[in-house]
Image (cartoon, rainbow, N blue to C red; front, side, top):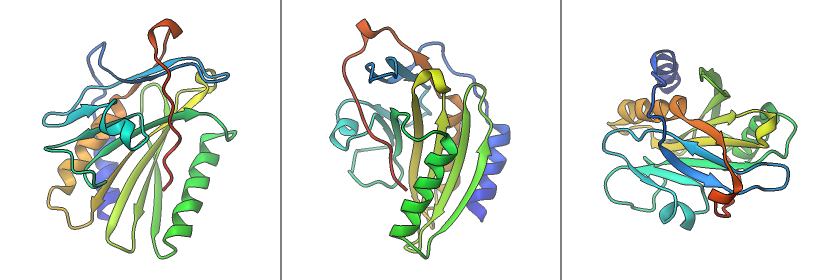
Length: 195
């Protein structure tokens, strides 16, 4: 519950101002979905990666602190995928179902996230293993042909938990989707992250 309250507090106070051009990831046209790019400023002390570690684990981008360890804790993960389910609510419901199948004793809480240009909703998965996942789905709109998510795993006793969640929500609310011209975008695809 503390985690949910911390996120709710920050979501209401987060500033969405970011530089005009800070592209983090991009993808080529995929069926009806046009080429796209995702831009966001990187918080201080975080490293951006779209093409080495992110590609190795099958996601569009990661942000991490210090040296890359390969562990999911304290890593912000960006996924972008072609819309398959009819609504973002259906995506979220499917994710909740997958999570609870894997951890029937886990707890799930959801709430809307204020974003200037996209519909976004956050889910906090509190694992019975004392490892929690924060997952935010965003929908840039039907014309985009894609949906995206940011996620981060945090141990429930992590002493840096509040600072990590604050940085995570700063990234979420500052994320910008852009439709791009095919000529500038190399082929790149990744599927959605399950809970």
